[in-house]
Length: 226
Image (cartoon, rainbow, N blue to C red; front, side, top):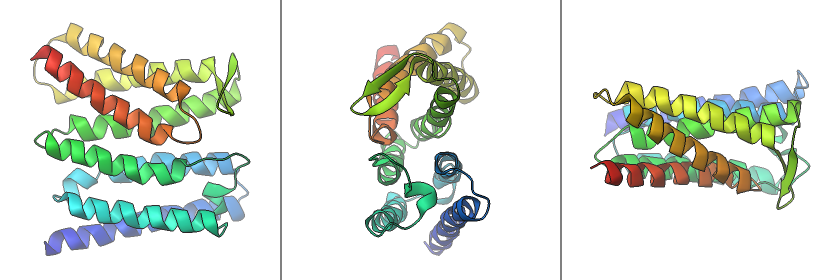
């Protein structure tokens, strides 16, 4: 118990350091908010990779996620942390992120601490979502609008491609059998449906819908193959 308390303090310090660095990048180096948001998005995912290793009880994960959700809500209410919040659209992405992390940890815990149920949803969210946003902004081909959010076919395509590669690598590393065709099919299904989920989600709720869709697909595929 004392070890997990110490680990919780360490993880809290890492998150606070991340928020501080984002503010420094925004205020001192004039990095655009869209980039600092993606930096926080990606790095948050990297830090949460430590949760299954450092925290063995979901209550510690809940306390961390709830604490930072509270901080983010306060920052929105009082216009703090512009490196995350100073955007010209309504988004609940920063608040949704802690919810998705705790949901993934619950799935990991429920399915006998199967790392696939935690790491794959978080990695797809942390890596593929920023790739879609940044490439779509850089090369805005095939624009479309979902509930006021601007999206692009190019961004959605890059989400699909990066999710497929990530899933295939993850299946290959995490599974001991050699059914390469099964890795391919599973990766294709997860990449396709999470890309569709990202495309139809708006106002930052993709931070919840993408991991949730990944978990549901993992459950369905496991049932199908057993």
